[in-house]
Every structure is written in structure tokens, then in C-alpha cells.
Length: 273
Image (spheres, rainbow, N blue to C red):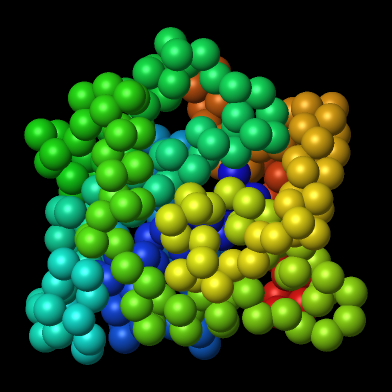
């Protein structure tokens, strides 16, 4: 799922409401790691937390979004310059939710194994609870996985998604490559993101995917698909997932090992940023 994170982020930024809101109201370009942590602390609490924590995070996100409004500084596809955006706009929220759900399923298929039709349907229906906590009306959500993926594909080709100047500026910042060894890592992540992106949005986001990039992507995908399933289950799951399993089994306690590993990794990323 982390490998598909760049894809989900760029797909979200392709919605003008999201790109303008992030550029004008977010600390992403000042504190990218902090922004990432705060976002996924709330997302993971809604996905893996108990009811109290899920509702608390949902209310927190809704409250923050209520203060995020503005106007588009340029014409963007279906929206003229000066059109008003709101972070709690149901259509924009539906698109953000869709990028997360669809990108996660794609990553599972490419790097672990394809899900059966029944598994995809169950996964999708279970995600409706997250959508509800996100503030998306049920009647806006496509009724089946097939209808959902058709919605995503229509969006990729529609004038509701456009790579605006704010979206491109944030994309360049997110994939800015530092010097040294980390430069190669960032370039590799950019190539993996390019390979995962819908072709309709790859070029607008200035993602190269020529013969060299295709070879690297193909070899990396094959290597990861062979390696990832062999990792211990505890190395493949977020600490909140493990804590959720323990809570469901009636033995709630913090996942100290997972939390320690997460802390070390975040420190390493922070030093490399």
C-alpha cells in the first residue's frame, strides 16, 4: 500500500479542489512528514480503531475541513477561474476515498496476489464504513466493485480531473530528489509511481515512463512479488492493525515492537528528507 501512496496522492491532486486546498491551507511543503503522520493517524484510527477513536478522528477531520475554503486561481477543466472550493465538498471527498480504496486493491494485486471477485466485493463494501466516517453520503457511492472501478476510469478521462499549476508544483516537491544514495531511492519511487499511474494522467504529471523506466518497474514488481509474501506477517502490517486484532481477540494492548519499528523508520525518513 505504501508503494501505491504516491499514485493515490497524485490522483487526489488531479482534482482541482484538492490541489488548491493543499497548496493554500496545508503544511505539506513545510512539514511533509508531519502532514503525512497527521493524515494517516486519522485514517488508520478510522480503519483500525475502536468506535470511540474512529468517531473522534472522523469529527476531527470534518472540523478541520470545515475551515478549508477558497477559490480556484485558474480555470481547471470543468471549473472556471474563481470557482469556490470546499474541503468538505462531497464530490471531492468521494474522489479522495476512491483513490485510497482503488490504489490499495491495485497494490495488493500487483505486489502480492489478485483478489477474487468475492474478496473485492467484500473489501469494497467494508470500505463504505470509512466513506461514511469521511462524510460521503451513501447514495453517492457506486453500488458494486465493477461500478466503482468504472467510476474511477471515467474520472481519469473526465474534465473533473486536471493537472493544475498547484498540483504540478506539489508533485515536483514530493518527488524532489536529494543528493547521494537517497537520490536513487527517490528516483525509484518516482518510476514505481509512474508505472502505477493511469496513462491518461502520467504525462500531465511529468512522469517519464520510457523503455528504461518500464524495465526497472517490471523487474522491481517481479522482485517485490517474490519477496513480499515471504516477509513475516508482523513486518507487513501497521501497528494499529495488530492492535486492532488484539482488541478483537479480547486482549487489548499496545504493539510495542511495531510502534518502535515505525518510530525508527519515521526518524530515518525525516533525516533523509
